[in-house]
Image (tube, rainbow, N blue to C red; front, side):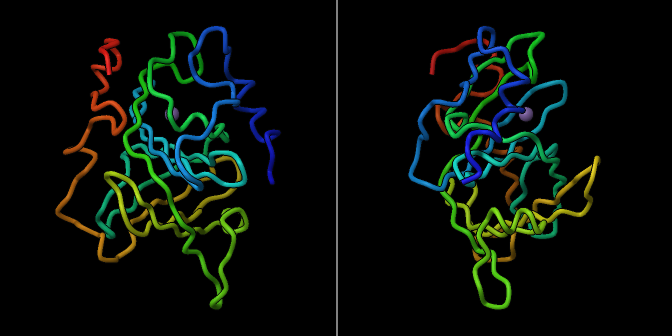
Length: 198
Ligand code: MN
């Protein structure tokens, strides 16, 4: 277990008397392991891609969001670990708070590890340390294999999120543009921002 200590950065950035984001004790929402993609209209719009690993959500900010086209490489910038309970968070982070803006749950589901080396499965935590992981997503919008590959380390650490060329690949789809709503509430960002009922 990496344990809850990896949430120190998450907690340090937030004032839980101001934001409705969970401090980290909320329960997970689906069978393990889960993935979630949150559409986040912060200072710049992005999609937060999160994978459950050792009790926390490993996280990347993907400016353009995921693609179902294996030829599209999407930049993914690592961000701090989030608590499992964050996977169900949808709402408005108040002005003046870290990440201020509107969040909706763009996709959510379970995943399984596909990462192998020389025919042996590499655990996700180890794969992430090595800089390459492959997962099979079972979401509502996204299904099939995706890989995350680190291409820059250090201060400007950066990864690429790419659809694997499998039966679920579909270059004709553009889910980010065509399916903007929350998979939890059906709401758009504008409706979440306006506080419209779920
Ligand atoms: Mn974000």
